[in-house]
Amino acid sequence: MANASKEAELTGRLAREHGVSEGAVMAILQALRRGHGTMAQFSHPDFGGMSQWSSGMTMVGDMFNDSLRAKLNAIAGELSAHLREQPAEQRPEDTAVSYRSAGPRHTGSWWPQEFGPPSSVGSQNDMRYAVFPEKRRLIINDHGQTKIYDTGDHQISGVSQGQSAESTLTFVSQHGVVRVSDLERADAR
Image (cartoon, rainbow, N blue to C red):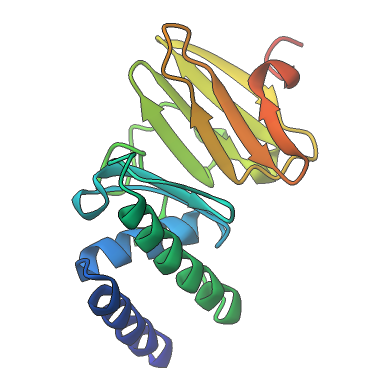
C-alpha cells in the first residue's frame, strides 16, 4: 500500500510541476509499465493525442510543440527512474493498450492469443503492430493482412511509422534502427 501512496504523491507532484492532469501522468505511468519502464506509447489529450517516449526519442501528437515534448520527456524520464527503483508486479490496468485507445484491451485482440499480452501495440491508418519480446515476435497487420516476424535478439524500445503512401514501420532496439524488411518472417517457414 505504501508504494501506491508513493505513486499517487509522485503523479500529483509531476502533474502540478508540468501543468498537466494527473490522468495524463497516470497514462504515461501505465504505458511505461507495459513498456517495461523503457518505452511508453499512449494517447492523451494533454499531449495532443497519440504520443510515445523512449530514452532519446520523444514524440507528441502536437508534433511541432517543443514545450509539450519537453514536458513528456521530463515526466516519462522521472517515472521510468521510479519504476526502476520500485519494481512492482504488473496490474490488470497495465495490460496492453492500443496506441489509439484510452482503455485496456482485454479481449478481442487481433493478434493470436498464444502470444499473450504484448509489451507494446500501436496503430495508425490501416496498419497496426504488436511486440512480444518474450516470444521474440513482432506481428504486423497491414490492411487486414497479418505477418509475423522473428525479432531475434532485438529488444524493441521504440517505433516510427512513415506517413507516405507506402506506410513503413521502423523500430529502435539496442542495435539501433531496425527496418521490418531486415527481420526474418516467422510465419513463412
